Image (cartoon, rainbow, N blue to C red; front, side, top):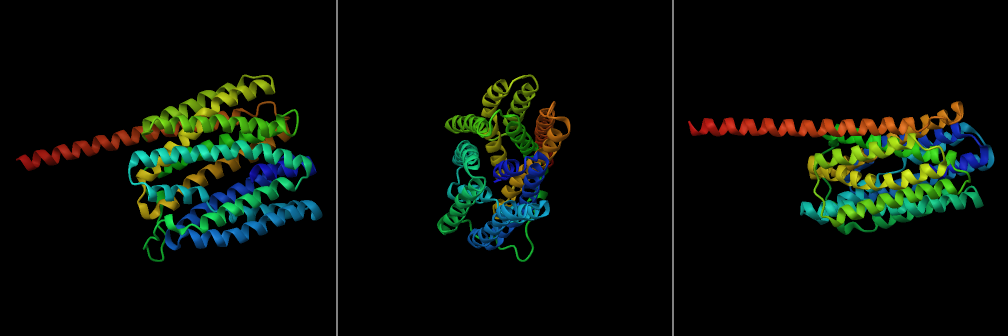
Length: 374
């Protein structure tokens, strides 16, 4: 959806700042709304949330297309982006919660999350290429295709109540998954990863020699990420903070290499190689969240991860859009590197905090055992 907005606005107006702002507004609204819809899913069930948001989502996209096609008002475009983002529930969070409901063995849950991340990436392989081609042929065709496939998926999921998690008996007050120990750090890491994705997407679209080549490179980037998730799932992955540190450090190393190339082809090659670390790292984040939060607030917890990604992508997209406009894109990859450094730093902090808490627990248990012995 975000890429569809960027391509459509740049094709019709040629303004990267407006495209980045509209995409950023959409992502920010989705980031704010995600945990709210997630909490409602935990308290009222996924089915009613999916049906309600499907109607609002369609209205938001109609506003965007209508404004660009007839009115050409910046504020009208931003209003449509606001409605669309606010109506976008975290469907990924809903699906991940269902995986945790179906499987009770931690190893199988971890494999399921890796496979699910890989399937997500396959959509990012097909999506950018399709959106790029359709937008080139007819500017509203891309985003309308996104709307059609999104509504189909949402209503299809709503029609399958059999594996829907049980509604939590929490009264009128929603649970606050973000307050669980470790969740702020996990959300900060997803924010940084979202920043990398949003900024890099915008840079590639702007720097591509042709309108179709940019989305194709992004599709190739997603393909290697999907392959990485499949390989990780095949190894029956274990979910630890140590592996999270390895994943974020790999992302930092490959993202830093993007500062070196002088040609678009070289940038595309580095992205292709570096993509392999993204989906496995995201699946580790998902697994750690599943272990951190209670089952009755799991949809909200996963929605917080999606919100972290969306808000980071919004900041990355908006910032790079203005950098490209004001500096002619001379050093735009500095921003993704900063995001990657933040992700690696937070993962190390999470690992150290986890180790410190485990040490304190062990010391307390040892002291209690000695007292009982006396």
